[in-house]
Length: 123
Ligand SMILES: [Zn+2]
Ligand SMILES: [Zn+2]
Image (cartoon, rainbow, N blue to C red; front, top):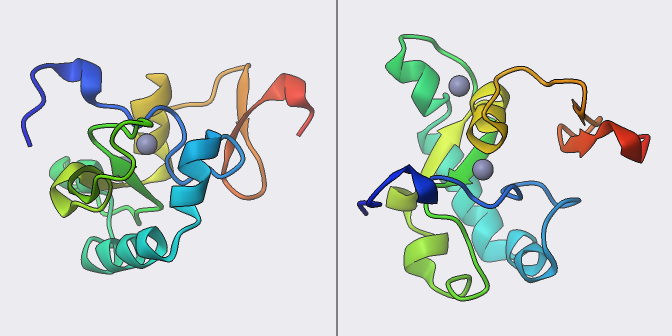
């Protein structure tokens, strides 16, 4: 797994986020295969992999797809269920990955499920 540049290092803003998930992805994220894979991965990688590199021990909350899921590859387990293509990330690192900012700004907030929302939605 070797993305040519940084452009693929995102999972289209919906990993683990059922409310924001695109319809095609929602089915996948609700599937037993993914739930089991995610649980297994998190049990093997209980701490944020990026924070760990920086010497910090932070519990991971997200399993993030390095090469993001598209309608074309969503049925490809080498992308979706490949331990080489996911990272265990904490909320902060996941937020930074998707929004380029560790801290939530005026536009974004977390709801009670830890999902990122726009404030205008009134959540
Ligand atoms: Zn982190
Ligand atoms: Zn992600």
